[in-house]
Image (tube, rainbow, N blue to C red):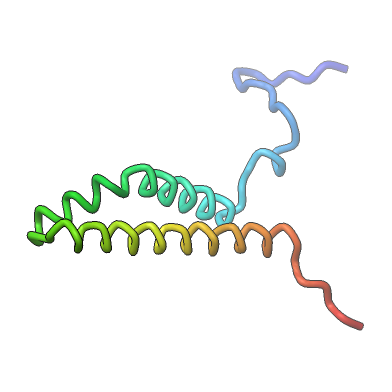
Length: 92
């Protein structure tokens, strides 16, 4: 028995396996944004220093604070992945 799909291309794999839940898409997007921001943290702080006339000492402080914020955001996103992968076990 052959199936005629007409002009449609045949489906590959199981349709449910190919789609990502919206929570996964948001986590991936957020991780990419945090990663991109962490690559450009020095440039971001330089732009802030120019815009707000920050001195060298304040610029270093701003860079440390931004780095800590990005690190905390990365940690929270990682915890979200872990919570999604390993849901809490219900006690009986």
